[in-house]
Image 1: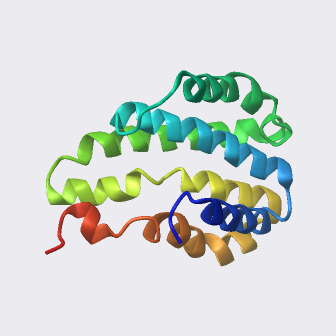
Image 2: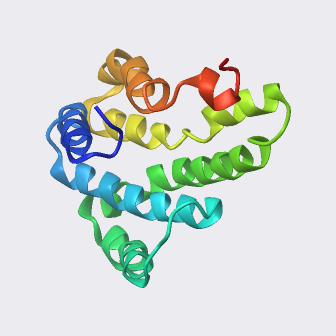
Length: 157
């Protein structure tokens, strides 16, 4: 299944909703964060033609939708430091992604530390035992299955 296709998005949403114990406000929060960060990444990478509507929608989401999401409002003090470190790690990944092989390998993981937001929501909605049950599955789904590390590192023949 192609990443970011309608089919993939449905599968992703079904998984997230299950992982979040059916909490639709948590799922909506992840949609908002995803919309914002995907556009941010496209702006930095300059690898996708963005329309004014794309940019306006992401800023509206950042300034209006996300701050008013009930799940965010209730848990923002817990989630904000995780979002900050995910942003910081993604910025480090962008810098390291053109470095040595070791730096690129580190960047491969750093660019996906937003996965920890998903894990934090699992913790909030389901508790630590459930987080431990799902943690590796979450990393595999959003990290390892998204891109082949050998291809990402340029190690393919």
